[in-house]
Amino acid sequence: SYKKATLKVNAPKATITNKATFSTIKVTDAKKVMEQGKGNKYQIADKKLDLAVSSKASVSSVNVTAKNGNVNLKVDGKVTSVSVDAKAKVEINGKTKTKVKLTVNEKGADVSVNVKASVTVNADASISLEKGAKGSSVKVTKENINVEVENNTGKTVTIKDAEGTTHKVETGKSFVDNKADENQKNPETEKPGEDTKQEDKPSQEQKPGNSGGSESTGGSESTGGSTENKK
Image (cartoon, rainbow, N blue to C red; front, side, top):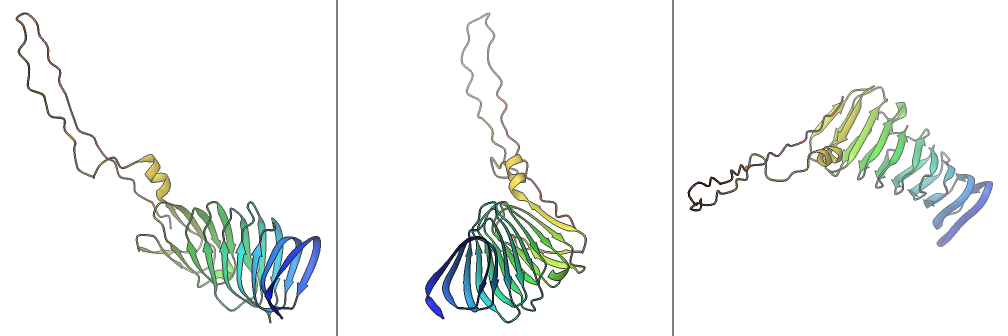
């Protein structure tokens, strides 16, 4: 056990097997890492990596920071939490019986989930829930983001949006929350239903033979966008 040490993995094209426990394991370059230890915390900066957690192993956390990365996480043991903090493609699969806590924090992340998971979405993202993700739930925390959740689990999935509304999404259908695009198309310039009028100035005395004056029409219309949740 090396609980106070950090293991740095920079071994291109190599397959690494770890059985020890470290403070942190940072992977910058490797072909595959096979985790057989207990309680490790992974930081993945490798743009292409397979991380396999064996049936008797446990991982406290996996943090994906590789921009434009492609990470495949196979969980046969236990992984407590996964956070996606980069625009990356992440696949989570395996035979684990423990629900994974998944948090998506970076715009543009594309995550495929094939294990039971509790998903929190904090940025624009695309989430695909596959057959192994039965019993999963999704929570969207912000109103001004675009989120798409595809349900391929074979069962209905519960999704709670940022306003607290619960949506039941049937299998084979998708939930789409595109409030960010709606707000860009329909910016709110004033309170709904409120008209702005310009007061007419008192007319001035004009010289005979001259006709003048200008007509001022005021008022602006605010159009509110709505979000269509496809089921």
